[in-house]
Length: 292
Image 1 (tube, rainbow, N blue to C red):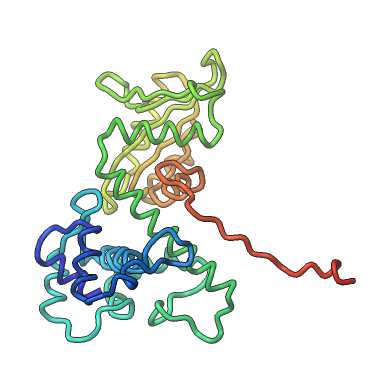
Image 2 (tube, helix red, strand yellow):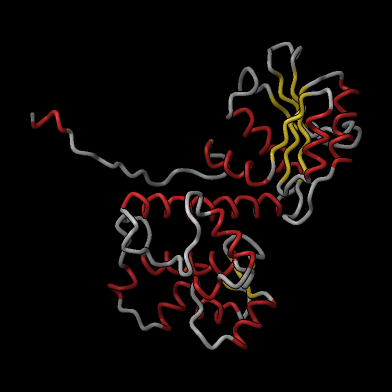
């Protein structure tokens, strides 16, 4: 992690360039540079650089100025100037952002002091599931980062596409983005039948992680639904909802469903919107009846 951070301190760096530069710095042989993971789809060196960048970014030491690039943050500069110990997952646990990431990556257990190692008490099944949740959590954060950087119309289109993929609407052409001036406070609509008699309206807020949606925005959306004379609405944000916002949605007469950033990213992963499955593991078990 320290070499990746030191490279970022020299300026904005492309991930692929970082792999080459660090391979040179470590004086790797050609065979070491070309060594692949067991999947055969990525080199081991590229995988190490990718995860070092991901972990440092989750701790707030790096940021992504644009696709496929990273650069150091003020916090990262302070770490380079003061940290005398190894920069690893144990070191990164001092940052609340990294703790939050580890908690999202550990759905069934508490993060250990050094989550990079497995204990003798960890079973292979647990190791596999732990790795899967870490990969999924990192992907979810990347998806939200990209959505927050996107144009409003693109974000609204993503939400419509996601809802159609989830089974809303009567077909591929039953949803559209309508967010523009004079849209009466709604950004998209899904027709649940061919004539558009039954409709679901969408509000999409592309907010930074720390910008919580309050109750006022829910009431405004409720008013917009009233103007459209509909009773179903989905409010989606890349951030989160305040407790008062959730209480307001529950109390209003219209059926308003709230989807926060974490749920949005998980739904996108589940329905392969903005991402795709690149590898599937099959786990076989002994068939006892075969030997009887």
